[in-house]
Amino acid sequence: SQTIHQWPATLVQPVGSPLSLECTVEGTSNPNLYWYRQAAGRGLQLLFYSVGIGQISSEVPQNLSASRPQDRQFILSSKKLLLSDSGFYLCAWGRYEQYFGPGTRLTVT
Amino acid sequence: ILNVEQSPQSLHVQEGDSTNFTCSFPSSNFYALHWYRWETAKSPEALFVMTLNGDEKKKGRISATLNTKEGYSYLYIKGSQPEDSATYLCAFNGWGSNFGNEKLTFGTGTRLTIIP
Image (cartoon, rainbow over all chains, first blue to last red; front, side, top):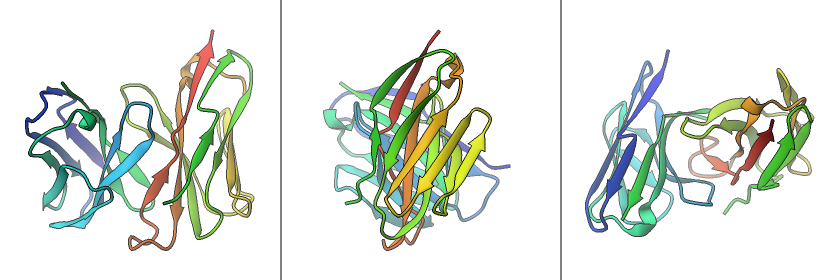
């Protein structure tokens, strides 16, 4: 069966510091991978999606970036965090049905 | 930009009562409508996927209906229990983006609290 992992579970980072969130999927190959964010009082917003290694599409321009160095690994990064980057970050895999990881709660102080 | 809206934003229901809430979505280029249940500190869990106009799905005390012509779906919970407390998200799959039908647009959710 398929499993999706995300880490860390929670993170508190100062403004201007870098960010790296990692997501890995087991039990499937060549999955579509997605990064979503839920900011306070907002819905789930798609940030990035990837259909294969090195293929990243961005939905929302911002100071975040994503990379897919391996088939089942998806990384969300930032060089300098902003206060507005605080939120709950979810990784998902799938195609027209999507399955979510446990999420990372990021607080930028 | 696709508009997927859910109402109400939040709802308090007495244990044992039944309730329902709404998701509205674009009626053009429809492919599928998804419902997810999202408990605090857990991952969103898929409840239903509906693709055909008039679809009705049921899982225990929870059911959902779909009207693709007018662009809405209802989620019903019969005999609410405390464990039903969660945020219920709907997500729209449409054709036409450069990602085919593989992109979900989520509503903001309905936060349901069951009062014992």
